[in-house]
Length: 215
Image (tube, rainbow, N blue to C red; front, side, top):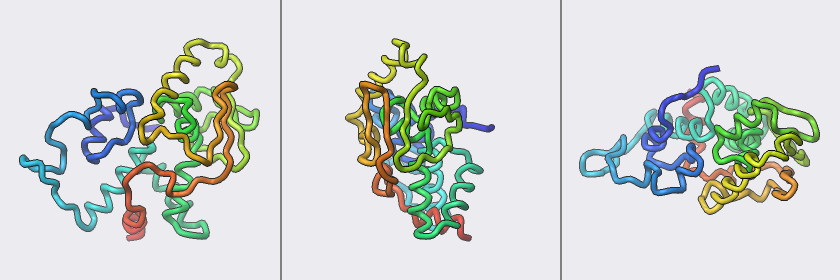
């Protein structure tokens, strides 16, 4: 499966917003978005070039796709599913994006970044309702309980990783949402309810993404 392997800080600068792709670095002074430099989309005076029409729609889609670490094909498939569901397409789309297993592991504070959460899931470290699930795009449901492989719970490296992740809770994107209940003592998380678009800590206009794919 294809994946982005270039510098992730470049993606944040392109979207002119923190996408929280580098874990602890995003909450430190080393973050590229904290440095004063000319960002893409700005002229020499620092003025932002206005985006209109297709360019505006494209930037919104790219921002969300990169935020969740998905390829174009994966993102489009999610949109198609959301469009076939009853209700508002944009709400359906973001609910599914938030319900992705790798995103839930990240939002629960068990990983420093979505990349790390995706790797944990792919390596079979995460169990859902007692069963190993190694598909990052797996959609969790209400009352689902997330646990970890017993062997990992005995690892000091794993415990240190969790502590580092918990320490990042002050950043805007790391606040555990109300739809997830976390027990750090037992390394468990439970899905209390389905998320809504209000739980997405990202400046985005969902209607523009719908308009882009509806052409």
